[in-house]
Structures are given as C-alpha cells and as structure tokens.
Image (cartoon, rainbow, N blue to C red; front, top):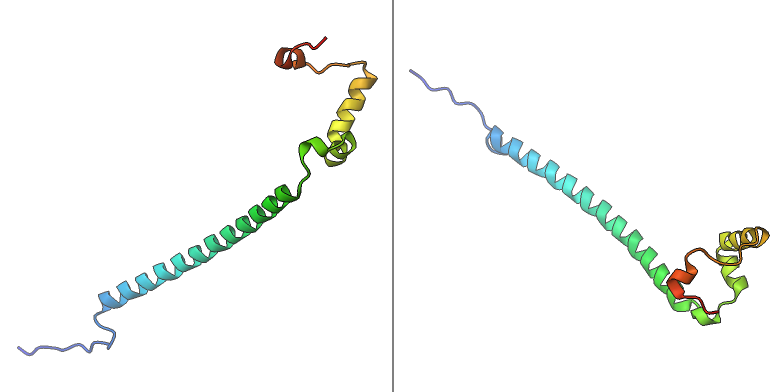
Length: 102
C-alpha cells in the first residue's frame, strides 16, 4: 500500500489558515470599533470643553438683568406677558415654597 502525500501550503494546515483569517477579521472589526469610539469621545470632549469655557465666561447671576434673561430664554418673556395680560400677579406654588412676605 502506498501513501499519498498531499501538498501543503507554506501557510500551514488549512485549519490554521482559516483561524488566522478569522483572527484577522476580528482584529480589523475591533480596530474599526475602537476608531469609532475614539471619534465619539473626541467629539464629546470638544463639547465639554466648549461648555466649560461658556461657564467660565458667564456673568454671575447677580449681574444679570431681566432683559438678559429674556434674551437668553424668550419663552420666559412670553409667559410673563401672558400672565400679566390675564391678571396673574403671582406664581402658583411660590408662597408654599418661599412663604408669603406680606
């Protein structure tokens, strides 16, 4: 009985080649995920730096005027105007929270 020798590739047995290909695919996938995560983190970091700079440059609360607040949040001005038109001179729940000063 004679033995038949099958040629093998230099890469090794077929199962090892498949494993190497699988490992490479997983590695590429993980690298892409890491790059995407790094990009998201860089974007969030830039947003946080901008927020911090905004906070550092903001005026103290006691230096704000009513006009400043209404300019920053126009809906507050509209709400106050509507309350004045309807004759509402008090805010619901204010007395319960802060007490009646009169």
